[in-house]
Image 1 (cartoon, rainbow, N blue to C red):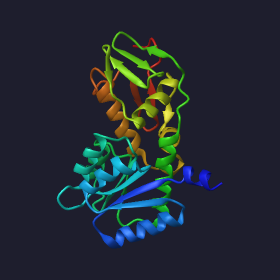
Image 2: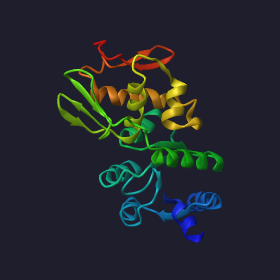
Image 3: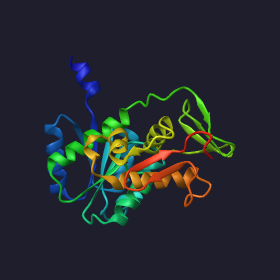
Image 4: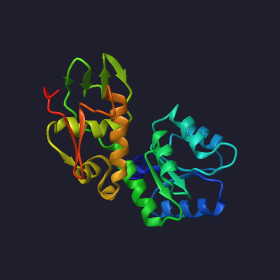
Length: 239
């Protein structure tokens, strides 16, 4: 029983240079059964990501020397570990920058312990969620091919790298080609029930997919929007 418990325990790396915040976050996570590791700088965090292999990283944006964005960029060069960014600004530009660099989520300070734990659990669920993708390759047309077996997309025969969240979103869109999926449906399926009111996530990741897959992202042929409702992947043969 003790061995089973150990294998199921998740380790969270908390990266911040504020001792009080670290203490509060660690206490809340430990109460919920998580193991917690701590780093007070970007370089220390990078070392622990590679040596300790945490299941999730909570990373503050505002840190001296190597800030959160620089740290995130360095982490993404060596690991796909889920990263939740902490920011005091809460500005759209900071949120978009973090997500664009590969963050999985962000939380604006001050935040409640309940919100933090909820976001951590949701991010861990997404990371563990195996997409029941068919072992098949879909050749949409001469320009775009989607290989579900290898979790990749090919544009003009060249592989396009997709992040896990981008892949999950594309999977649900393609699996329902021709059918409009509402913002709420996409949020629930891709991010989790806790994100049902976070429409900006859908918009942002749709933008990412269009930039990677569409010949002209401003005039998409594959990922189509239905104003005020949601998005659909063009029915095969529609283009």
